[in-house]
View 1 (cartoon, one colour):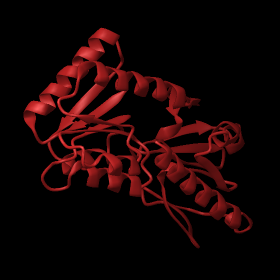
View 2 (cartoon, helix red, strand yellow; view 1 turned 180 degrees about the vertical axis):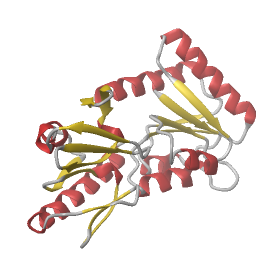
View 3 (cartoon, one colour; view 1 turned 90 degrees about the vertical axis):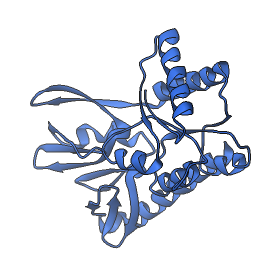
Amino acid sequence: MHIAICDDNTHELSRIATLLDEYKSEREADISYDTFQSTIDLLETMKDVRYDLLILDIIMPGTNGMEAAKELRKSNCDIAIIFITSSREYAVESYRVKAEDYIIKPAKKEEFFDILDKQLVSLSRNEAYLTLKTGNGIVKLVFSQIVYVEVINRSVHFILINGDIRLAYGYLNDYEYYLLSDPHFFKPHRSYIVNFRYITELNKNGFTTILGNTIPVARDTYAKAKAEYMKYLLSSYERRDSI
């Protein structure tokens, strides 16, 4: 599990990092983390680096942790977020951005460890993946890294959130059964499958991805595409409000 910690207070940042080190040692957990003192730096890094969990202080100068979380949710980013703060006034608002938990400083070790335990279980349960045979060997490709899939001739292109492309020889239907079993994925065109996590818009030209690509939607599929995308968005809000 790759974690980002963001707190403008260096003492608190060090304290959380120490707790993570203790957790990693005591649980023998496969975790790593990066630290940030501003949400601007965090959001900029997230354009290139994928995290499984964000631990955010709320009260910070400039763009605070709550504002950063709202920006992430606007872009359909469903990364797990834990707020850690000295104030209770944002507790209700934290659930509106689908936060996993809300911890009052100073974080108690047992409480913090329990939350991390839950996140590791959730991550292992939800991280479905494909095994690809590529020209360079075998690649494990986690579903949540895929922005969209495109087939060109007999080459299947998997475009990832970090901008990388994985190529596999074959046909789209070699993979669509597995991908379309996940509600995040939809086939708008015979040559494409998209991941709703990373779609920012649907218009007459097609789906727009977070990378700026436009994915065409077949004319006879447009009504279904619109209905399925709306269903996905509404279901995301329902999950958020039920936390």
